Image (cartoon, rainbow, N blue to C red; front, side, top):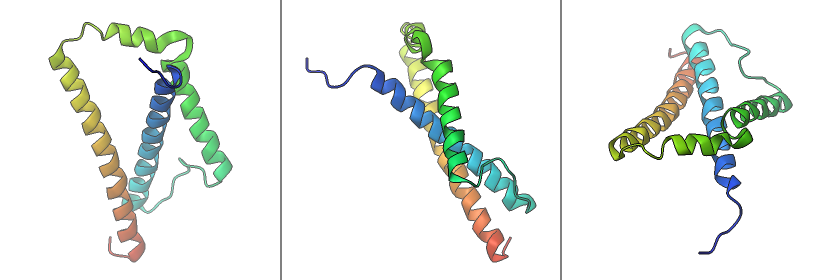
Length: 120
């Protein structure tokens, strides 16, 4: 079998994807709050450097919770005996979460556009 890279790539990519989805949820919640109330929040920084710092902190927290000291292998071992029906339910929950995250982000942006045009 030919292998490219090392086994850590999957865990780092999953950390980056979870960071993106979590940050996307924060942006969407702040956008919905603005669209509904008209007041802006300081949940997301306005400075690019601070946004990068927020993303790095989120990625670091997720790394220490899920990957550090072989935690990811422990998590994988705990799910090895899981039945196929539970695996299907888990995949369905992940897909639904991903779709809801994108829908929340798009709907909050749409409501912000309506608010800024004066239609809401």
